[in-house]
Length: 346
Image (tube, rainbow, N blue to C red; front, side, top):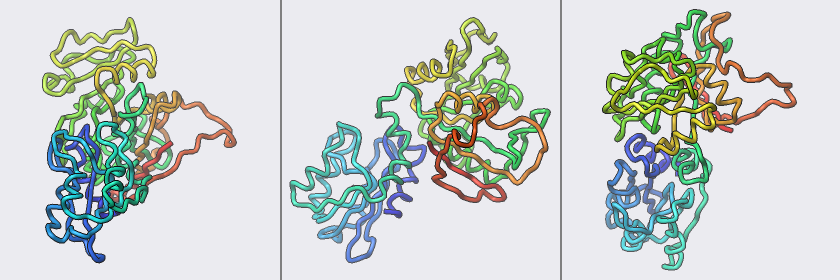
């Protein structure tokens, strides 16, 4: 299952809105075939693994991160391929929450295949958190926040300069992570200060380039900012308070969203099709999202830097006694060069 989960990650940025899925065929303790969902509309992980296993699939076990599908979509049902291949046991991490595709485990059981669900389910659900959120009863996008933070809790110095707090490995990781989200968000102060475009420039070319979302409370944006230079190709959503429209005029690909709260803003973004968003700054926006309980995941890149002052991370988050502290859990911790990535979830 660990191998199947690792294979599933290879579809990052390429299969949205489908889930990330990996599968292996095991015979006599050996992996004889492996596969993953590599491209939206392309071959499913189970069929790829079965094709790789060939005749050795008969009498073998299929280990997959998601319940095999039963419906005819852009690909035929995986259950039919499993039965035709002669698989005798299927181990899967999680059931499929999509009612159109679910029911594969029941059909396999009815055909006499041994079924073992739930192995490493938490890891599989975490891998597909954005997919699961989109299918749930949520009126906002899945929201993740990424911040590079110094040892003393700053995201920039007193002048607002943050180039470069984190190292090259961390910056490479950020571009990979961007590729898997429907939109990339930031506060207007961050966009204006860095003249940021919020684009993906890593090793993964997303199937659909993430839209950009700018939260502009003070009408700071101007039409000459770089983020608007390719808006006709990659949309930009500008969120602003009612009565404080930024003076950018009409730009192809730019949508203005009037909202007087983050809750309202996120609800509108969901309505216009944004199902997940990676917010990258700044500290006030991150703190406001946290205060309003609107964050699902945090990527905090801890940098071995002391500033002794500057722009704080999570600015404006109301202090509380230790007994009332909000405690989340660390679900991943890894080095990125000299930096350390902490992945934290509610």
